[in-house]
Image 1 (tube, one colour):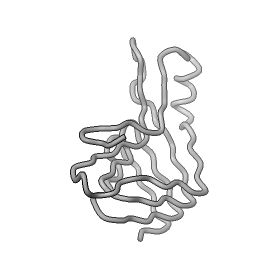
Image 2 (image 1 turned 90 degrees about the vertical axis):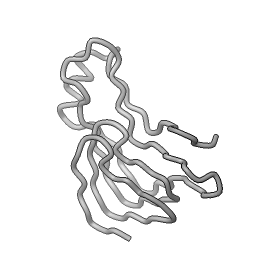
Image 3 (image 1 turned 60 degrees about the vertical axis):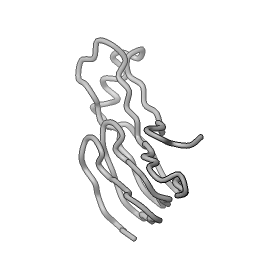
Image 4 (image 1 turned 60 degrees about the horizontal axis):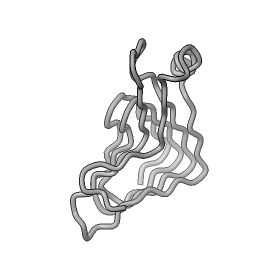
Length: 116
């Protein structure tokens, strides 16, 4: 268990590698796939900040918060979110409002052998 931690990065900020994990009272920021998992993970009482991916994108910009990396078909992988807040950083909001059609943020994206 990790408690009262701040993770600041861009991509693959937090990798919950295997088995079961529990994170409580923390802040995490990133751009794309910044919570990356191959485990059953519980996140409780936390704050997530989405940062700008590109300053001047010409095409769609996708900011994806979580991604699963399912490498073992017998292992249960999932996220449980409890008492959380997901916000955009001030910089992201300014870019988003300047060009609404280009900027998109998503909570999750399947990756590799993720089961549906």
